[in-house]
Image (cartoon, rainbow, N blue to C red; front, side, top):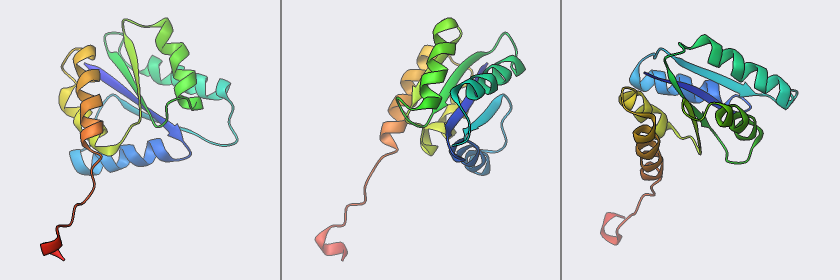
Length: 134
């Protein structure tokens, strides 16, 4: 099974997780980690390691973070690099991606990554008003 660590700046991670539960229902093996302005990278790393330790050693882990190149991403890269066969990292988390992540938890981690990247991109759309619709 795939476990998810959701991480981001401020209250983003907990808020998006709660929103996803409202839509899809509460999920097991999902942890939210908020990186607050008064915290440093070492504290974030400790939170990540605590979350990882709370999952089964059989689980594969996908880190879903808000921003490529931000501190939650950078700290997670170190952990993922040390556990490349078991873990991966995706940046640019949005709500469609997270809800979809719950539906593919039984698939291989490579399949999940490719699917979630497509889902996240497809979730970004704009409303087009036709002249006759005004």
